[in-house]
Length: 135
Image (tube, rainbow, N blue to C red; front, side):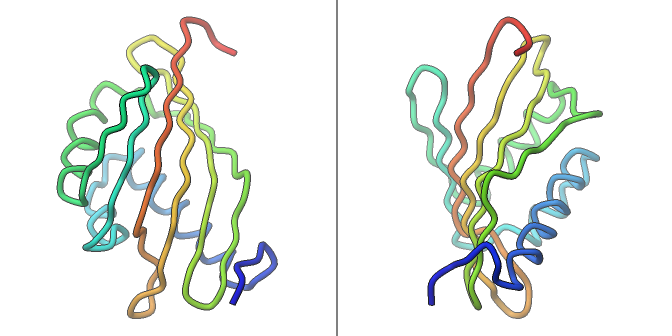
């Protein structure tokens, strides 16, 4: 089955990510354990072209260590694509942070699987871009 933006599960996939963003912004890290699949892999592409890879445990530690320096009181999120089928979902989304006084744009490509009645993130590719000035 081909994923589609009009499939009924697309709304559920977006709602899942909305919950994750809300939880992490509020420093409720227990939401990570529920939404990240046990086999999840993340790929972080930094400004300098460095590619970092983490598993679920490593990525959760990275998020917890770095949330303290992110000023996330008022982040905005733009959804560029949300699609799903009966068992899989995919989102491309970007968000803005003011990290340590520098503007940072984070783009994410996220793959979901439906497992035991809940959507879980199986793969996340994160690209960051920092600028000295607001765009």
